[in-house]
Length: 343
Picture 1: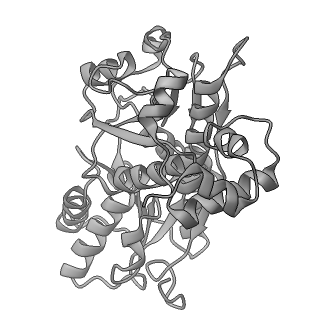
Picture 2: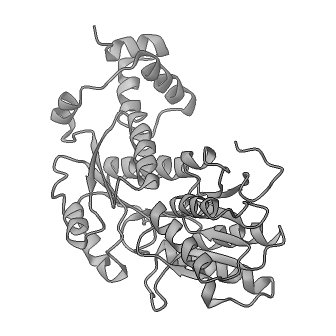
């Protein structure tokens, strides 16, 4: 038989009411008690009856997650992290893929295609600062990414500029001076995006080191996939452009760069060092393993889900919107250090 709320209460040594309060994220539960209940839920693999809970509370226990493209490894891993964070809170996740389409992102905000959800986590790529008013909807929303700041919703973002600067400084500290950047935005691009912000970090690191930026080392790509990273490196090599390092604006680009360098017989990191961004699981297992910026994807998911649940349960006067940026770290692997074994 499926475990019941009574089973959870008995294992955790609390009342059924306390279990219900933990599942529904009521704030007035001591942290120690909350942990005991969540551990019991995991141990018993207890699944709340979402339908019954919805009839009582008017809520479904389901949150929406709208992402640009699940085939992109970062978003696939982010979705996995969000699902696990939601399950720890007794929630289910309904996922929509927007393909970066403006209309689909607006539809997600309105709840179209994600009916029956209590709130939405949205990672927009086409909406921008001029679309702030579109976020004025009754549905609780938490934004992910870099497109809209200062709006009416909570927002979980990254330290894109400072982390990119740290990545380039990591290369500079290893004596690299001709650092190619792969995944650069179009030269006239002004909208805030991961690409423009990471480019700014790249530029700051070079300026601080007294190195002039070289336009021939900025590789604009249409996508951030492996094929684009490989194609950019092949162009650099074919054009005989000298470079001793690569900063790829995500790990997929970096993995493509490693492939192209290997095909050309270029030794990594002896001749060209490579660092990526996102710290994908896959980066540990490439040959050589790929150094990367870890933006703390797990914390991003955990904080975003927690914020959204708080907004769903919010009563009374609404608190001001919040912006959170988890800490990052540089993960050094074989692609930037011959002495480091991939881990």
